[in-house]
Structures are given as structure tokens and as C-alpha cells.
Image: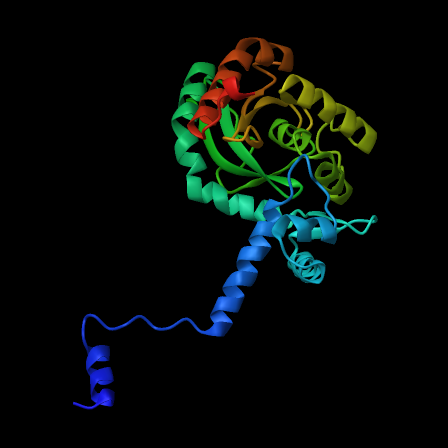
Length: 284
């Protein structure tokens, strides 16, 4: 049999040789690896890096680092600063949202949300930040007695404004300062309830307080007659990646009473969910 015949025989067998990777595929794979490695260079300790610094960290030439960074800027994953350096952009949050689906945040949290709803007899929600809004990942409503059970959102998949909700305040408060400032600059602080925060300085002061106490609140800010409190959920690295809340109608429970009765159960639920995500307070 000729060599050509051998080749055709191998292609038809169960043991055909794998297709060879083309030089073009190798090049694209290398560029992708370097691009992802470049994103990994940015940390809370190193929020801004120049092209020379990136080149040194990745072991590549400065011009190559500059081209990669420019491409990542165009894709929305990096930003160019006034000092001609680079920093992560909000596009990275979209990757984080995909990661939530991968690790099954809802599946990890749902039993603890159910238990919190049972203990509080109130509406319980789990949310993550999606730009200037909160995406409700899960929501559990206890069997209402009167109007104690309250749905502030339309269920999983719905959105709430971050600036006037307990969930949103917790998530905004724990962002790096530059990301927080960028998101706030995108917001219209519309007055949705009688006590809605409507000025940027007031919102920033509120967020500082939320970060210091690890507890966010909404006292008739989203809508008249409602209040809510929220606590942070952390991942393995200790970063706040979600928040869990309890909400009530003020005809049954005011904000002070809501905190007094439920802050312990709320923080316990948030901690248990965090532990399911790999976080341990012993590491802090």
C-alpha cells in the first residue's frame, strides 16, 4: 500500500492522529494566555500598573505589553488612567457574574436563605452587583402574617437600584474606591422614597458607615413604608461578592426593631454562605 493509502487508512481508523495545531492557533492561544495573565497582575495592592511594570511582571517586551493592554482597554477590561497607567475596568465585573453561575452561588446560598426566612418570618434576598444596579440572584418569602412578609423585588433575575437598597449599599461600600467612584458617577440619585439619599456626598458618607459596620440599611429609601437590612457575603479570598438581606413593612416592623430582632440571624446566614464559598474568618 502506498504512503497515501496509509494516510487514508489512518484517517478512517479509530486511532487517527489528532489534527496538528496551526501556527495561527498557537499564536492566538499565546496571546489569550498573556492577556489573562495581564489581568491577573492587578490586585488591591497593585490597582494601577504601567506598561513597563506589566512587561517586567509578564517577562515580555514593553511594546508587547502596551499592545496587549491597549487591546484589553478596547475590550472593556482595562482603563487608561490620567497618569498613563492601566487599571481594571468594570468589564471585569461581567466575568465575575459568569463565575457566580459557575460556582453555583444560588445553590450554595438557598438553604441558608430559607432558614433565615423561617427564623425572621420576613422576605430574604441574595444579590450581586451588576453595574449601578443589584441583580437579585435568589429570593425567599416566609409565609406572611399580616404584611410582615414583603417582596421588594420581582424575584430572581430582577434588578434594584444600588444606591437606595440595603443590598446595594453593602456591595458598593466594599468596592475599591476607584470602582465605587466610577459607579456613583453613572447613577442618577432619583428620589424613590421619602428618605432616599439624593446627594453624592451623603451617599459616600453612608457607604463609609456601611463598610465600617458591615451592615447596610434601607429606611423608606426604595419605597414608602418599607425597610431592610443587609450583610456581606465573602468568597475564599475575603472579597465581598454578594449580600443577603431581610425586608419588612414598617406597619409591622420599623428599622430599629428590624435590626434588633434580626441582625444576629442575618449575619449568621451571611457567614454560613461565605463559608460555603470557602471563606473563613480565621484567615482575616
